[in-house]
Image: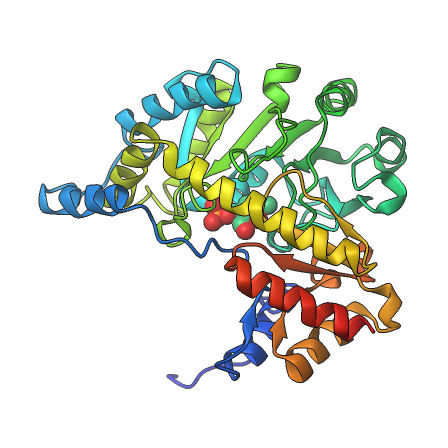
Amino acid sequence: MTTARTTGISARATGLPHHSIREVMEVAWRRPEAIHLEVGEPGFPTPPHIVEAAARAARDGHTKYTPNAGIVPLREALAEKIGRVNGYPATPEQVVVGAGGVQILHNVLLALTDPGDEILLPDPAWPDFVQMAHLLDTPVRHYHQTPETGFLPTIEELEELITPRTRVLVVNSPSNPLGAVVPAELSAELVAFAERRGLWLVSDECYDEIAFDGTFASPMSVAPSPRIISVYSFSKVYAMTGWRVGYCVAPPEVAATLTRLQEPIVSCVNAPAQMAALAAVTGPQDVVGEMRDAYRERRDAAVEDLTAAGIPVLRPAGAFYLWVDITRSGRDSRDFAFSLITERGVAVAPGTAFGAAGEGFVRLSMAAELDDLLEGARRLVAHVG
Ligand SMILES: Cc1ncc(COP(=O)(O)O)c(C=O)c1O
């Protein structure tokens, strides 16, 4: 039979929760003049020395399989970066390189859970977490990061959510979609909670170097623990989304398991991309600072304009998102986002794309140019009415 079957597809595949940011994007693509504030992707090109390193690597024959965990020079350089930037010691054996933060996170959850085990996820959160949990058959219990909780996790709520099947607490700081950063004292409490309850703490730090006010600290640097797995990415920090390189730092026995799991999933990350990542992490770091400064400038200007217009917005301490309260419009966040693109040509992500707790909010990406961001914010203010 060569005809496509609609039956016989797994419930796992057909039941995959969908990504509603994509639906806004599809409307926006039909409007060439639209202002794009919906996408979580740096507008900057990948710095030229990184691109050149990949081209040179391909020409020089770095076109073969690599070790499952990544090439040794990259893992050495990443262990050094963890000490320099994240402030805790790591060995190359603890570093596992994967196809973006997303694949590493999936692999980590695969290594730490069996079907039926529960994971604690933030609400609102990056939607891929819920998709991963669905594929792994791990029920999710959501903890809230809302105005009522100061947009941060609370130990009280986590204590209420835990059951004998809970295995993993996922914390994402700096947060997508909130831009919130977990303060060091709370990080230490979260680590203590995970240890006390025998959980793994998966710390998604993919925006680690996009933090503005010196408030971000890796949980491993604040409260070192063998229960923490820290996940990082080249995508946002170096404007390398399409290269697909991320990595984690895990206790040695977990890293060994993750390395074995890479084989049937990706085997290894493509070799020229690993060489590009090596050039990124060992090359000039001013590119990271320049992009961070641009995001900070955009944040300050947009927060000022929105605040002056009486629109509540969470001032992000990290990442490149603005979490904007649109309740005054009287519309729900999905209706607000779709009417904003169709009536005013501005694409934003509805807050509910990130979970039920996102109702009443939309997310604006500061990855757009300053002028576009401010014009988009101006039209959003008019749309709120
Ligand atoms: C919170 C968070 N974690 C991880 C990722 C993974 O990014 P990548 O797979 O491109 O490294 C993203 C990307 O949007 C993200 O927002």
